[in-house]
Image (cartoon, rainbow, N blue to C red; front, top):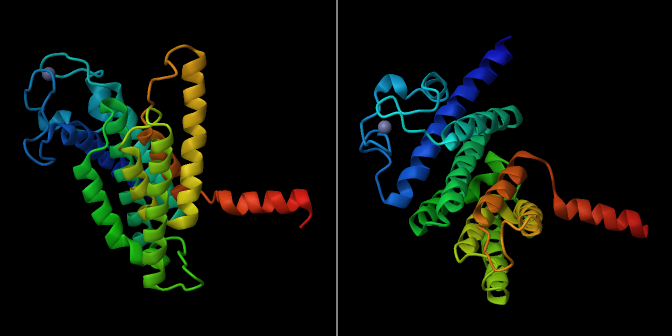
Length: 271
Ligand SMILES: [Zn+2]
């Protein structure tokens, strides 16, 4: 009973964070402050009254329309609120310790903001990359305490954790940079910056898993779009959402591409 109540509470915290994710995704590309002005309708510019600002509930009560002008509120608003609620609740389920929970929640929040902005505007904002890099640089030495062990050359110290993250960031950046050099039209210029962020956030082994998931999911979606004729061969596909997806999968699951493939290879070859 108590456990269910706590899960519900964490879900509601997550829903409110989702509300913040929506605001950030709307305002950052417009170079607006996240705090001021208070929430307003993007269609009629009227301030949204406090009673209409409850995540999820207000959307349902207003039937997805602005209370002032009746303009449709994007479905994304409620989808992201609920999705963030679920992800944050799950993060709490796998990492109830406050430091782990905070680290996972901050990471998920940043990834979601990047995913929405790239999906809707085809943009990876340099300012957002800078903020994200700052946050993850500060966190980098402490992953041995706040999450998975992040060893480096057999060491398990703060310095090892930092070195592991920095190397992962450099390799992930380089990987996407080389892809872009080889296929200039395939991916956007922001993707390598987001890959850098992912490396810094996840460290070597998890970043590899995240990049693998991102490329796999991106490949499937690109094939479907190509085959269904909704995108031509020359259209670039924003990779930010897939990188965010890979990052979230690798944060919230035990999936380890390197370990699994080593197991697979040794199973197949008998070594
Ligand atoms: Zn309105």
